[in-house]
Image (tube, rainbow, N blue to C red):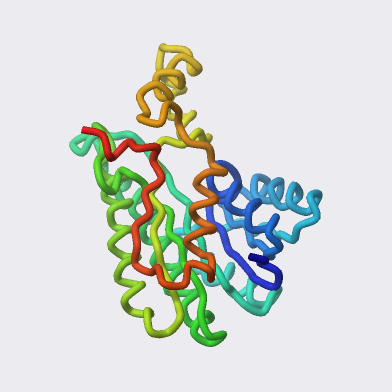
Length: 255
């Protein structure tokens, strides 16, 4: 389908999955608002989209700030007049065991990963209701289902996203607003690569181990998750809401 005249907001779109999502929607004709903490990163993606003939605007924001979120939504409506799709993708992923974690570290993960989703969803719903509908896609993680040592805050935040999304879906199911969650597995992104920097083993060797450990034989690519996000948002997918879409190469299927 064509996404002409549709407006899509993507948080955490300065790289990785967010960048791939933004580029995919823009390539299909949508106007995309790229949101990230570092303006230079989202502006670089906006420039990339513009060079390919697409339409994109970069906005710097702290997604855990109520004031910043309100500004992004206000500026989006001022620029484009509507918001058709909200993709909440921004996240942080520190690896700290529970008893080594300070309250400030815990709050930082929860506010960045989960409270940000609440703020953006709460903010976009009135616009979507006024225009007659819309779609929300919240990017969670397989850590919502099963996790590893050192991911207590991250896993809690990602499980919270899945639960929040189901509640939003039910609240607005009769008002033409759909909300679904995408759970990526291991995907080759800057976040994944940064988690390997402090290890003694060379990064490419570790990545090969990651590839070999996946049932499908490799880690995912950001573009593969972007395809699932677009499917979840598409009007062609009009009967799906409150769903959890797992895209993990078979990781959570394996005993």
